[in-house]
Image (tube, rainbow, N blue to C red):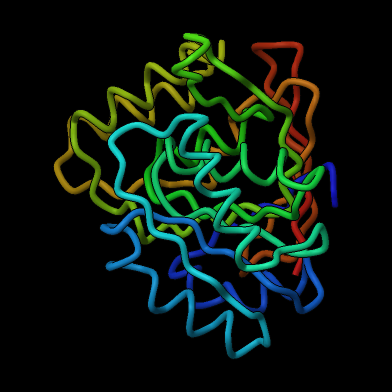
Length: 246
C-alpha cells in the first residue's frame, strides 16, 4: 500500500471511480462501506463503474448514529464471512464519521487493507486530506482509539458539495482553526465570502491548495491543466506539495 494518497479533484468524479481505482489497484475484491442515505444517492453509480472495470464489490450499509469499536467488530465479522484477504480493498463513502470508520477498518483488519476514501461533505474532504489518523470510540474502555491510516486514494467530487449550509461552513471554519491554518488569508477570505453569498460555488482547488499538511505530501490530480506546480503556505512552516498528474 502507498504511504502517500493520490488525491483526485474533479467535477462529477464519481463517474471516474472505476478508472481511478484501476490506476491505484489491480483487480480485487472490494467492500464499499457507506450509510443508507449516501448509498441511495451515489452508490449505484459507484457500483456500476467499479464493476465495469472488473472489481468484485461487496456492499456494507451502516445506519448507526455513532460508529464505535463495536461497529468495527461487526465489520470485521462481515469481512471474514466474505473471505476478504490482505490483498483486498476498502472504499469509504460518506461523511467524516463514516470515513473515520473505513480508515480504522482498513488499518486494522488483517494487518491492513488498501483504502480509497470518497468523502461526501466538505468537512470530511478536509479531514481525510489533512489527517493521517482514524479514531473510534471504545465504549467499554471509555476512551478514543486511534490508528495510523495508509490511504491509497481520496476522490474529491466537487459536485457533491455545490451548495453548502451555514452549519457546514461553520464546521469547516472550526476544522481549519484546529488545523492551525486560520491565518491563511486566501482560505479565510474564501470561507467568509461563501457565507455572504447564497449559492456560491466553492473553488476546491484554491481551498485545498492553501491547506498545510503536517509531515505529509500528496499527489493531486486536476483535469484541464498540464503544468506541475508546488505551492507553499508562507504563514506556517508546513508545506503541501502539489503534483498534477493525468
